[in-house]
Image (tube, rainbow, N blue to C red; front, top):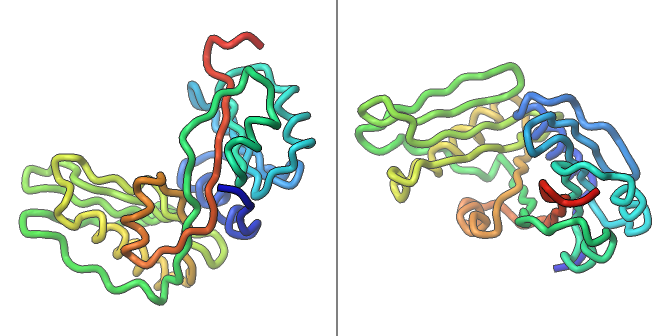
Length: 218
Protein backbone atom coordinates (compact mmCIF):
# COMPACT_ATOMS: atom_id res chain seq x y z
CA UNK A 1 0.00 0.00 0.00
CA UNK A 2 1.51 3.31 -1.06
CA UNK A 3 0.82 6.99 -0.66
CA UNK A 4 0.70 9.42 2.22
CA UNK A 5 -1.74 10.65 4.85
CA UNK A 6 -3.31 14.03 5.48
CA UNK A 7 -0.69 16.05 7.38
CA UNK A 8 -3.28 17.73 9.63
CA UNK A 9 -4.73 14.39 10.70
CA UNK A 10 -1.27 13.00 11.44
CA UNK A 11 -0.42 16.11 13.46
CA UNK A 12 -3.65 15.77 15.45
CA UNK A 13 -2.90 12.11 16.11
CA UNK A 14 0.66 12.66 17.35
CA UNK A 15 -0.45 15.54 19.59
CA UNK A 16 -3.28 13.48 21.05
CA UNK A 17 -1.07 10.42 21.45
CA UNK A 18 1.40 12.50 23.44
CA UNK A 19 -1.37 13.85 25.67
CA UNK A 20 -2.83 10.40 26.25
CA UNK A 21 0.55 8.87 27.07
CA UNK A 22 1.70 11.82 29.23
CA UNK A 23 4.81 12.53 27.18
CA UNK A 24 6.16 15.88 26.00
CA UNK A 25 4.52 17.61 23.05
CA UNK A 26 5.85 16.56 19.62
CA UNK A 27 8.82 18.45 18.16
CA UNK A 28 8.61 19.37 14.43
CA UNK A 29 11.41 17.74 12.44
CA UNK A 30 12.02 17.29 8.68
CA UNK A 31 8.36 17.50 7.76
CA UNK A 32 7.31 15.18 10.56
CA UNK A 33 7.15 14.89 14.33
CA UNK A 34 9.58 13.67 16.98
CA UNK A 35 8.24 12.37 20.29
CA UNK A 36 10.52 11.68 23.25
CA UNK A 37 8.81 8.75 24.97
CA UNK A 38 11.50 7.71 27.43
CA UNK A 39 10.28 4.18 28.10
CA UNK A 40 12.38 1.01 28.14
CA UNK A 41 12.54 -0.22 24.56
CA UNK A 42 10.73 2.88 23.33
CA UNK A 43 12.98 5.89 23.74
CA UNK A 44 11.65 8.00 20.86
CA UNK A 45 9.45 7.90 17.78
CA UNK A 46 9.49 9.89 14.57
CA UNK A 47 6.26 10.11 12.56
CA UNK A 48 6.08 11.36 8.96
CA UNK A 49 2.84 11.89 7.00
CA UNK A 50 4.68 11.06 3.78
CA UNK A 51 8.02 9.52 2.90
CA UNK A 52 10.90 11.86 2.13
CA UNK A 53 13.39 9.09 1.39
CA UNK A 54 16.50 11.30 1.39
CA UNK A 55 15.68 13.01 4.69
CA UNK A 56 14.67 9.77 6.38
CA UNK A 57 17.81 8.04 5.11
CA UNK A 58 19.96 10.76 6.66
CA UNK A 59 18.05 10.55 9.95
CA UNK A 60 18.24 6.73 10.05
CA UNK A 61 21.98 6.75 9.42
CA UNK A 62 22.55 9.04 12.43
CA UNK A 63 20.62 6.80 14.82
CA UNK A 64 22.66 4.11 16.54
CA UNK A 65 20.57 3.20 19.58
CA UNK A 66 17.74 0.67 19.63
CA UNK A 67 14.25 1.68 20.74
CA UNK A 68 13.86 4.62 18.32
CA UNK A 69 10.98 4.05 15.93
CA UNK A 70 10.68 5.59 12.46
CA UNK A 71 7.10 5.72 11.18
CA UNK A 72 5.93 6.90 7.76
CA UNK A 73 2.81 6.67 5.62
CA UNK A 74 4.20 4.89 2.56
CA UNK A 75 4.65 1.46 1.04
CA UNK A 76 6.58 -0.88 3.37
CA UNK A 77 9.20 -1.61 0.72
CA UNK A 78 9.79 2.14 0.24
CA UNK A 79 10.48 2.62 3.94
CA UNK A 80 12.84 -0.35 4.06
CA UNK A 81 14.67 0.94 0.99
CA UNK A 82 15.28 4.27 2.73
CA UNK A 83 17.08 2.77 5.75
CA UNK A 84 20.10 0.52 6.16
CA UNK A 85 20.15 -3.16 7.08
CA UNK A 86 20.18 -2.53 10.85
CA UNK A 87 16.50 -1.55 10.75
CA UNK A 88 13.75 -4.10 11.17
CA UNK A 89 10.09 -3.75 10.08
CA UNK A 90 7.37 -3.70 12.72
CA UNK A 91 3.59 -4.05 12.65
CA UNK A 92 1.79 -1.46 10.54
CA UNK A 93 -1.03 0.78 11.75
CA UNK A 94 -4.09 2.20 10.01
CA UNK A 95 -4.93 5.89 10.49
CA UNK A 96 -8.70 6.33 10.74
CA UNK A 97 -11.06 9.27 11.24
CA UNK A 98 -14.77 9.87 11.83
CA UNK A 99 -17.21 12.78 11.94
CA UNK A 100 -18.26 12.71 15.59
CA UNK A 101 -21.67 14.19 14.74
CA UNK A 102 -22.44 10.98 12.85
CA UNK A 103 -21.55 8.69 15.76
CA UNK A 104 -24.69 7.23 17.39
CA UNK A 105 -25.35 7.69 21.09
CA UNK A 106 -23.83 4.86 23.12
CA UNK A 107 -25.92 1.99 24.42
CA UNK A 108 -25.70 0.99 28.07
CA UNK A 109 -23.27 -1.85 28.81
CA UNK A 110 -24.64 -5.37 29.14
CA UNK A 111 -26.18 -6.49 32.42
CA UNK A 112 -23.60 -7.10 35.12
CA UNK A 113 -21.23 -4.36 33.91
CA UNK A 114 -20.71 -0.88 35.34
CA UNK A 115 -19.47 2.01 33.21
CA UNK A 116 -17.36 4.81 34.69
CA UNK A 117 -16.25 8.04 33.03
CA UNK A 118 -13.73 10.66 34.16
CA UNK A 119 -11.64 13.46 32.68
CA UNK A 120 -7.92 13.72 33.37
CA UNK A 121 -7.34 17.24 32.11
CA UNK A 122 -7.75 17.08 28.34
CA UNK A 123 -7.89 13.27 28.35
CA UNK A 124 -11.27 11.53 28.64
CA UNK A 125 -11.26 8.06 30.19
CA UNK A 126 -13.95 5.37 30.09
CA UNK A 127 -13.72 2.15 32.11
CA UNK A 128 -16.18 -0.74 32.26
CA UNK A 129 -15.96 -3.12 35.21
CA UNK A 130 -17.61 -6.50 35.67
CA UNK A 131 -19.70 -7.61 38.67
CA UNK A 132 -16.52 -8.49 40.57
CA UNK A 133 -15.01 -5.05 40.01
CA UNK A 134 -12.47 -6.31 37.49
CA UNK A 135 -11.65 -4.08 34.52
CA UNK A 136 -13.35 -5.54 31.43
CA UNK A 137 -12.87 -2.76 28.87
CA UNK A 138 -11.42 0.73 28.71
CA UNK A 139 -10.39 3.55 26.40
CA UNK A 140 -9.13 7.10 26.26
CA UNK A 141 -9.66 10.15 24.04
CA UNK A 142 -7.29 13.13 24.13
CA UNK A 143 -8.75 16.47 23.05
CA UNK A 144 -6.49 18.49 20.77
CA UNK A 145 -8.01 21.37 18.85
CA UNK A 146 -11.22 20.17 17.23
CA UNK A 147 -10.07 16.53 17.28
CA UNK A 148 -10.49 13.76 19.80
CA UNK A 149 -7.67 11.23 19.50
CA UNK A 150 -8.85 7.80 20.62
CA UNK A 151 -6.20 5.66 22.29
CA UNK A 152 -5.75 2.44 24.27
CA UNK A 153 -9.13 0.99 23.31
CA UNK A 154 -8.94 -2.39 25.04
CA UNK A 155 -11.38 -5.19 25.85
CA UNK A 156 -10.15 -8.04 28.02
CA UNK A 157 -10.32 -11.31 26.02
CA UNK A 158 -12.61 -12.84 28.67
CA UNK A 159 -15.17 -10.08 28.01
CA UNK A 160 -15.06 -9.80 24.23
CA UNK A 161 -18.11 -10.15 21.94
CA UNK A 162 -20.36 -8.43 24.45
CA UNK A 163 -20.43 -5.01 22.85
CA UNK A 164 -18.19 -3.39 25.46
CA UNK A 165 -15.82 -1.90 22.88
CA UNK A 166 -18.76 -0.23 21.15
CA UNK A 167 -19.88 1.23 24.47
CA UNK A 168 -16.41 2.62 25.19
CA UNK A 169 -16.17 4.18 21.73
CA UNK A 170 -19.67 5.59 21.95
CA UNK A 171 -19.20 7.20 25.35
CA UNK A 172 -15.86 8.72 24.36
CA UNK A 173 -17.38 10.09 21.15
CA UNK A 174 -20.39 11.56 22.94
CA UNK A 175 -18.30 13.19 25.67
CA UNK A 176 -15.75 14.56 23.19
CA UNK A 177 -18.51 16.01 21.03
CA UNK A 178 -20.06 17.68 24.09
CA UNK A 179 -16.70 19.34 24.75
CA UNK A 180 -16.45 20.78 21.23
CA UNK A 181 -14.60 18.11 19.26
CA UNK A 182 -16.02 17.43 15.80
CA UNK A 183 -13.64 14.76 14.51
CA UNK A 184 -12.29 11.53 15.93
CA UNK A 185 -8.85 10.18 14.98
CA UNK A 186 -7.09 6.93 15.85
CA UNK A 187 -4.53 4.43 14.64
CA UNK A 188 -5.75 0.84 14.57
CA UNK A 189 -4.10 -2.46 13.83
CA UNK A 190 -5.06 -3.71 10.36
CA UNK A 191 -7.04 -6.45 12.14
CA UNK A 192 -8.88 -3.93 14.33
CA UNK A 193 -9.71 -1.70 11.39
CA UNK A 194 -12.79 -3.77 10.48
CA UNK A 195 -14.42 -3.10 13.86
CA UNK A 196 -13.97 0.65 13.56
CA UNK A 197 -15.29 0.64 9.99
CA UNK A 198 -18.49 -0.98 11.28
CA UNK A 199 -18.76 1.99 13.66
CA UNK A 200 -18.47 4.46 10.77
CA UNK A 201 -14.75 5.23 10.85
CA UNK A 202 -12.98 5.71 7.50
CA UNK A 203 -9.50 4.59 6.52
CA UNK A 204 -7.02 7.45 5.92
CA UNK A 205 -3.69 5.72 5.34
CA UNK A 206 -1.36 2.94 6.47
CA UNK A 207 1.64 3.78 8.64
CA UNK A 208 4.72 1.58 8.34
CA UNK A 209 7.36 1.31 11.08
CA UNK A 210 11.01 0.30 11.42
CA UNK A 211 13.27 0.11 14.47
CA UNK A 212 16.79 -1.05 15.31
CA UNK A 213 16.22 -4.19 17.42
CA UNK A 214 17.87 -4.59 20.81
CA UNK A 215 21.24 -6.27 20.35
CA UNK A 216 21.77 -5.01 16.80
CA UNK A 217 25.19 -3.57 16.07
CA UNK A 218 25.21 0.21 15.83
